[in-house]
Length: 159
Figure 1 (tube, rainbow, N blue to C red):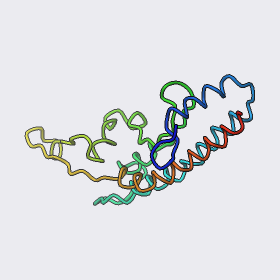
Figure 2: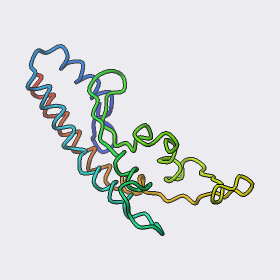
Figure 3: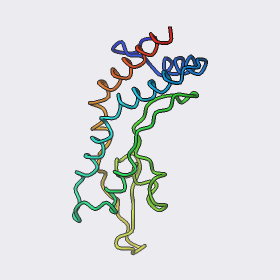
């Protein structure tokens, strides 16, 4: 099935994954994962650069919020199951315990409130600082086309 702009969708990825599991050709399976990863890989450094460019009064530090968000940014390629796909993720699970919700809060998809200098009687809303979607959306079409090309090539090899 072709999606919008003649692109293949998640159903095609799942179908191809099923066909690959039936095959006993480890080289094609390995190439499939490698090519999917290569198609989406250019997005990761751009998201990390966007995170590092967020305004801060303290400057950039690998141990600060921006450094930790950058380290938590990763590419996931899953070729099995119902959730088969390629995803760029700023993974809150990779953040320290007290910061797990901050990737969503900084982006602005979740409210971020905190006490002023630890005083529990005075709270402020932290303004959002979008870093993810405005970077990924413009590059999304090119990445989807690249993934579609990978799926077409693997489909030809399976046949």
